[in-house]
Image: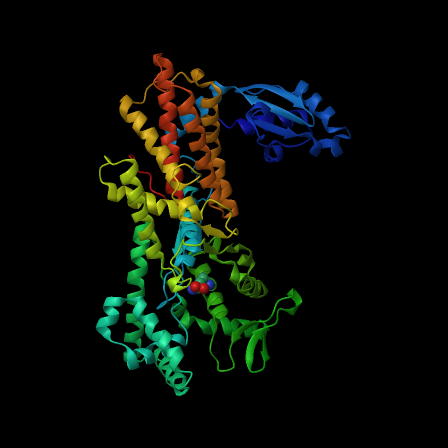
Length: 563
Ligand code: ARG
């Protein structure tokens, strides 16, 4: 039963407006004393030509309370609605038990595809801490969209094209050693690449050689391609190790080079549509009408650019997946890049340009001592994950020395702490990374949420809990009601996370359930003497466990049963 909709329907009968619209007006009051839903009457003041408090009084008198709503009260310019606690508990918990792992899910996506371009690593470059947000935001959105009945298509748009690969080959030929690189991985590739940039200062002919090698890659020369593929294999091996740790997968690794043979279409179409302009030898799309610098399509030497490839990729994705939305989870530094080429696609006459979304995010920075600054800001993601697991292991040894399989749990908690930390605030906010805050078991952290889940599991285990009939009327105390309300708010949070492409709505909803449950746990005895009360409280504990697990699953954090 949807209480909010029922209230909206009641209001519709007493006002000139429709239930659907009124439903969007209903607010959740800041504290439970003010009811479960509040209707802001000032929105009707103009239409009804009355003061909001007068409207509130009249509405509170006039409406017929729907089933499950205990009372309606005028308070200033609002009408506050109070749900019948037992009815609410019954509706919410029965939904959790019926839907289980699918709780908060729906089929609103109607199986439409949503492409999510995330993580999108660069070949032969380190996979560093700055890639954490795109990787975890992208994979959280992947799960959230799937939960709502969309079909997520995860795309790793590899940075695997560009003149730097010519440079890499030159560097490898001069100073590289196959065995060392096979063993040392990307670090070794970066080393010779850095050396290239030092040596080219005194020997500019290196750049000519690099250009020649890059041309050989483009022309499909066997040796050049073999080396290029080898760089790719080395990089992907390291990157995939991290994906495994994070439990992330992609449906496609079609990167920039995948579009080599798909550039012609972009250029031809732009030319046919009269959008290309010659500017100092380069082919550009003029965007001055939109107060943006031009989007460069072809350089004067005929080479395509990052934006050209993104346009080709968008056309390809539309053809291949017929997406309802195509998301690009990329740092805010590329805001202009996306605004420019989205505009170009729009100017090409594609109405689906409106479905391209840049899901932008802020920076990750460390507090003093959070990262080893020895390597500058190139802190490798893998190292951060390992450090998190090690630190967690120490904490667990200290807090729960008897826990079985400490290592597995330490991994789940350490990784979970990092992921949670990246998904706890709005994306655009810069993430400041502070080990103590991230791994704090009592703050608003991943470990706290996992701990709450483990606590609920432990209560159920010790009680030998088995689901049975529940008398929901005994869950009317303030603490239990708060847990019910938090659980009941979860499905809407999932929808909001999808609509705004902000996974933190889910993270916060999980936090809400955890906080409410812990308060309940401390203030009410779950193992009450009264059998009816005990059964109901255990059922509430079971629902809590379920919802936390679903929520953590959506954001990509494990939910261990013991901690
Ligand atoms: N590889 C790029 C970078 O590291 C990100 C690519 C994002 N995706 C895209 N379609 N442009 O900056």
